[in-house]
Length: 505
Ligand SMILES: *Cc1c(COP(=O)(O)O)cnc(C)c1O
Image 1 (cartoon, protein in one colour):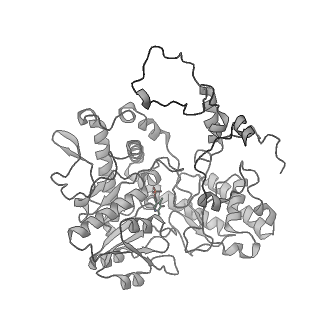
Image 2: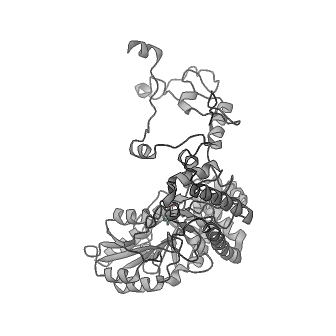
Image 3: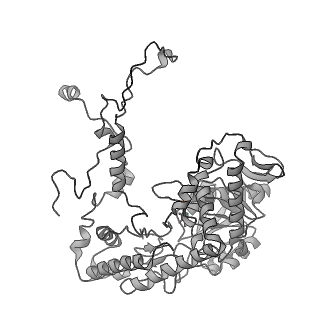
C-alpha cells in the first residue's frame, strides 16, 4: 500500500510524543512573573526548569483527541474480546456518575455529609448479595484480580484462624484458568496444583476428587469457565472440597452469562469476585478503572477486609477498624472504600434493567454467543462441540492446511474494520479464538461481523496468504514486535541531544 509523504492520511494526523511536540522554552500560559515573593522553600527550591513540554489549550486538546482517534472503542463497533465482556456503557450511567453529589466527594469528608453516597454503596451491596445469594460482600477491591486477592486472603485468614496454615498450602486451579487465578494463589503463599480438563472442556471431577486432601486450602474454578462452558458438576465440586476441609473460590468474571439465572451461593461458593466493569457495564479497557467487589459465604464473612459500610438507626457509617462484628477482619486493601464512580454506574445499570431485565441480559448474551457460534462453525472449528454460554470458542484446526495462523487471521480482521477476538486463550485449545459478543450487539451487527469473518475464512482456505501475512495493512501501526515490547519496554523518554551537545560529541 502506498504511504503518504507525511505519514498523515484520511483526515488523521500522525501524533508524535507529547515531549517531541511541545517545547520546553515556551509556556502554555501567559502569567506575569511573580514579584516580591520569596519562596519559603529556601535552597530546597528547584534551580532548573522541570522540562515539561508547554502546550496551549488547543494544542493539548488536539494531541489527546488525535491519539484517541487511533484507539478502538466499544462506542465505535463490536469489541469481541472473549473473557472481557466489552458491552455498551449506557450514557445514563455516565450522567449519574457525574452528579456532583457523587463525583465531587472527598473520601475524608465527614460521613454526616456523605450519607447519600454511603446509602448508594449500601444498596449496591444488597443487590450484589441478592443476585449472588451470598450473605456478605467486600466492596473495596478495585479490579477482578484484586477481588481474587481479597477472596484468597479471606480464605487464608480462615485457615489461620483454624490453626491450619502450616498444613493447608495447596490450591487447585484448572489448566484453562485465567492467569490471575494461579498468580493470586501464589501471591497468597499457596502452591498451585493444576487440575486437568475433560474432553468436553470442563473440570475433570474425578481428577479433582483424587487431588483433595488435608493439605488443600481451596479450589479456584471459573463458572461459566474460560472455554465459555457451564461447569455442570459445580455443586459436586463444592461439596467435595468442603468435605475435605477446603474452600471454594469461584472466579465470577463470567457472571454476565448467569446473572438472574443462577446464584453462586446456591452452588456452594465461598468467595467470588464480581467484575462490575464487565457484568454491570462500567467502562473499562486500557488498564482501568475497574471494580471487583467480592461476595463471601458465612464461613468467610467474618474475615472480610475493612473499610465496610454499615447501617444503623443513626444512618450509614464506615467501619474503619477492628470493632464489633469486624474483630477478625484481615486488614485493609485500599486507602478508602473503593471505586465510587463504578459503584454509581453499576447501580444505575441494575436499577434501569430491574430484576427481569438483568435475567434477560444473561439470556441475550448467551443467545448472541450461540448465534455467532453457529454461523462461524460453517467455516471454523469449534473448540468443544455443543452449545456455549456467553462466548464462542474456536480452535485453529480449520486453519491447519492454509499456512495462516490465529495471529494472522486476527490481524486481517483489523483491515476489515473489526477488533480481533481474544487469541491463544484459553491455553487448552490450539490457537484459541475466543469471541464474546455480549447482549448489547444487534443481530445486524452480529451478521456484519460474521459475514466479514466468514469471508476472511474463505480467503484463507482459498490460499490468499498474502492478505494475512501483511495484515494489518490499513492500521496506523502495522505488526508490532510484541515480544520486544514486553521484554524490553522503553519506559522512559530521553530528550534528544541539544545542538551544542551534538556538536561536542
Ligand atoms: C477479566 C478476568 C479476570 C480479571 O479481572 P480484572 O478486572 O481484569 O483484574 C479474572 N478472571 C477472568 C476469567 C477474567 O475474565
